[in-house]
Each structure stands twice: as structure tokens, then as C-alpha cells.
Amino acid sequence: MKIALLDSGIGLLAAAAALRNLRPDVDLVLSSDPDGMPWGPRTPADVTAHALACARAAAAHEPDALVVGCNTASVHALDALRAELEPLIPVIGTVPAIKPAAAAGRPVAIWATPATTGSSYQRALIRDFAGPAAVTEVACPGLADAVERGDDAAIGAAVADAAARTPAGTAVVVLGCTHYELVADLIRAAVAPTAAAGLAVYGSADAVAAQTLRRVADAGRGAAPGSARLTVLHNGRPGALSAAVARYPQARLVTAGLAAPAPTA
Image 1 (cartoon, rainbow, N blue to C red):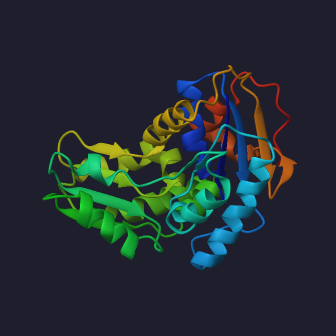
Image 2: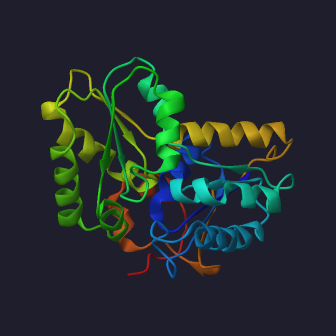
């Protein structure tokens, strides 16, 4: 089985690691856009164009499915990606886990990028799926960029800033950016001192990975085992994961046991 994932940067590692956890033999194709990131400030049409370029590069490797490992691209480009690639290649988007997070009716904080926070897309998800739960949107300026760079000091500062603006008594934190899942433990630790008992942190990677395997099975694809290979594409060019991402457990899971090229600086 071969699964491709696309994102502007390393946010796709969360879903890639979840896939590797469920299917250790899966071949992964990671297609990113370092020349064009970040996507957040771009117009919807521009995000779509960049996502399509990443998808076409990945599709050349004939994957059994394509995961859009980015909330922004899922919002703006999912329809265009499906129109171009399906039914040959199933396309799976990423949606913040608001529905399961709010199911118990406890206070919820949604951490997201400034571009996503307050957007009509996120507000619609809250309206449709939060039910009676009290929901606070928390913008996290600079956090995704800091995670991308592997800058511990900047990550710590951005997490502390967002935690200070998360209401006391919050019971659930939803991670509305796939980059944030790479530092979920830091986020949990920062929010916990003022949170309600039993703080829960919800990402989307596990649900996306499970849905991807279901879509592949439903399409009658991916029956043959993979060989746990990893292909990294930077704007369609062969590349490697940067040394900065080695700090993240998801990256270590994705690359475990691989005879991969040495990371770039």
C-alpha cells in the first residue's frame, strides 16, 4: 500500500505517523511546498493552485490514496483536488475534531492559526457540531512557523501566549492546525494548570489515517503489502526531511527503520 500526503510543510507528519502506526508496511510519499509556504496568508485560489501542484507531483508516484494533511488546503482546495484525481485516487481531507471534542458538552478551546480563527469555515463547524458546549477560538500567531523551523524557544513562547488566552476551566483543546499536533504534549502541559480535571487534547491525525485506510479498502486498492518506503518531494523535487524535524516523535516514527538519505540541514 502506498499513501501520499500533501501540505505546505511538515504538518503532514502527524497523519503520516498515524498511518505508519496503523500500517507499519505502508509506503509514504510526502509532497510539500517549501518554496511557496506558508499557505495561510494566500488567497483561496492561490492555495488551490499550490495544493494541486503538490498533488500532481505525488500522483506521479501512483499512490493508493492522497491525504490533504493541511486544514487550510482542505478548506480551499479539497473540491478541486477531488475533481482532478478521483475516482482513480481517493482524496481525504483534514477537518478539526470539533464534533468528538464537544460531544460531552464540556468547555472547548480551538487553537488555530490567525487566518483560520474566526473564519466562516471554523464558525460553521462550531455551529454545526459543537452543540451546547461553550467554545472559545484561540489564535496562535507564529506557532505553526516555529514548529516548521523546529525553534524550541519560539515554540515555547507561542504556546505560552496561547495558553494564557485559553479560558480557565477549559476541558478540551482542539488542535485546528496539523503542525500543532507535533507539539501536542507541550500544549497539554501549558494548558493543564488552569484546565478542568481530565484535560483532553484532540488532533485529527488518527481519524484521518483510519478514514484513509477505509477509503482505500472501499476502492479495492492497497491490498498488496508495502515495504515501508519513504519518498519526500519538495515542490516535486526529490528531497529529505530536514534535521529540524528529528525532534518530533512523529518524524521518528515515520522514518524508523528506513535506509533513507541523510537529512538535509
